[in-house]
Image (cartoon, rainbow, N blue to C red; front, side, top):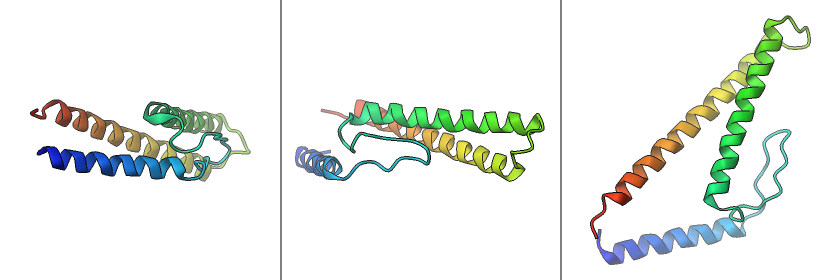
Length: 113
């Protein structure tokens, strides 16, 4: 990749980062409160928050599943199935993000100077 192409890509990324920083606060997931605006915490903190959200979804699905299996009359099967699907989709999304990050890291490490 040539130097002007790298500079162009870098400028585009900086422009997108500036747009993200100017956007309004991130919309919380149902029952969750997020006080930070987009771009304030940085990539690492956003990644950590995403992993924590995935973990909470999985824990909630597991808790609801165990309660349903124990015979709790207030828990419907369809609610259990929906929560399990939400947790599964969130996990798959996290897995794909991880795979993309690893691929991007490898690509950057293999670039010739």
